[in-house]
Length: 191
Image (cartoon, rainbow, N blue to C red; front, side, top):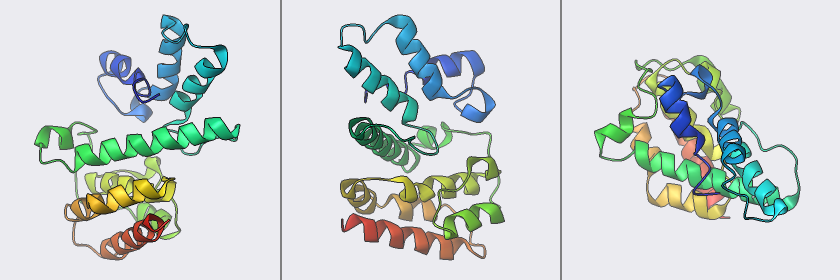
């Protein structure tokens, strides 16, 4: 699952020249299609093939659909790992990684819809993203979709939210939202 969850990204970029699922196609669905086309999982028992394919499919959706306990556990695990990986890249000192995810977003304005979603305790909606600041807040709001105390502890220890907040504009509402997100993270890190 860890090795294959983003296998669709390669074809997505070569075919569409973007990593943006909304401007191309869902890389998770594309990844499952590639897994089936290539037969890379064919030596696994059918139940394990299905588990890997579902985890790949579910890792980037807005929500994990209802499924059996094992599938949901692994889908949550890979989602958390993927989020940590992305947060590490975008808070890295390496400028290339910070620009790589979606350079098409510019500007520092923050949409009211993004702020409202977060203050309602929800992951910001991707369709509200208009600027780089919205994109950062969207990623910070992932604290509402993380699953394991260890994940929250890692986000806390590596100060991902603080690093992203430092890149946000000093405009009304942003400080309130970032404090709210950090409080959520800290509460969940306690288990």
